[in-house]
Image 1 (tube, helix red, strand yellow):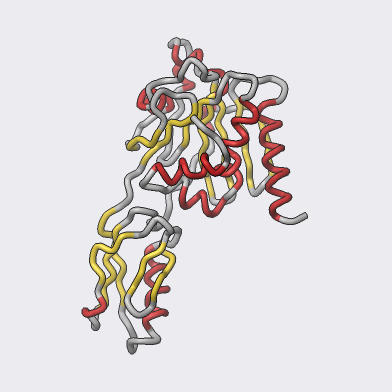
Image 2 (spheres, one colour):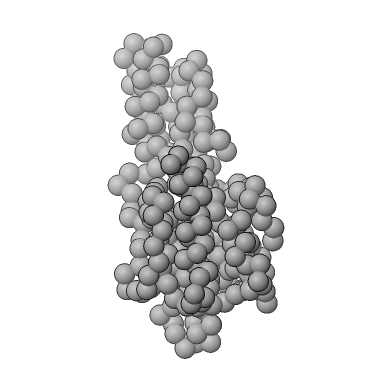
Amino acid sequence: MNSRGAKVLAVLGLIVFILAGCGGGNRLISNRDGKVESGELILDSLPMRPDASEYVIGHGDALDILFLYAADFNQIDLKVRPDGKISLPYVGDIVAVGKPVSALDSVITARYAEIIVNPDVTVIVRSFRPQVVYALGEVASPGGYEYHDGMTLANALALGGGPSKSGKRSEVLVIRRVAPDHVVGIQVDINDLLSGKRFDLDIPLQAFDIVYVPKSKIAQGQDFMLALKELILTPSELYLRGWQVANVKILYDFYRKSGATY
């Protein structure tokens, strides 16, 4: 089976797990490299994305590229473009997004070794893309909101203006990319949370999490698949663009490509 076929099966499997049988409730849906599983939500062991050992360059970052012995080649406040690349004199475009700083340093050094004898290159991140969380779907004001330490599910819903009347509160999802090949959907019935009965359901968020409130209409299954299939099943590109993006419009582009509207 080719990779496209495997992705289609993974989409169908994910939708079956989310929509079949029990409907709402608190569950964990996991897609690890196309293998979809669903199980009980254990609040004290939520899947968390590990802290990176080295900063990974993202869209919207600004870089200084410094040449120790060839200052004429220096590039100051060089923005990473929406396509994830930077342009450097004489060597052209270089992919920057997704690379640790040291890896980009090595790539640039190798490219300029064809022009400069023993180039000594240093890459410095001058400014960082903002960290955000997304409140999407059936909320009053869908969009990306600045992330801060200690942010929770209730905080994100409040920033999004709260669930709309058409939102299905029993199946709110926190979508988190734990690794490039691993996405989880943390499904929470927020009725008890919003009524003050279960504050333990106010789960902590990480930067670039997506809080998604699905529709309560009969068409919700199709809408959910259309809106989220790209986010769930395109590991590498969406990991870089959907989970590490400064401009939320880029994220919405994926919804429009899927035919979803809000």
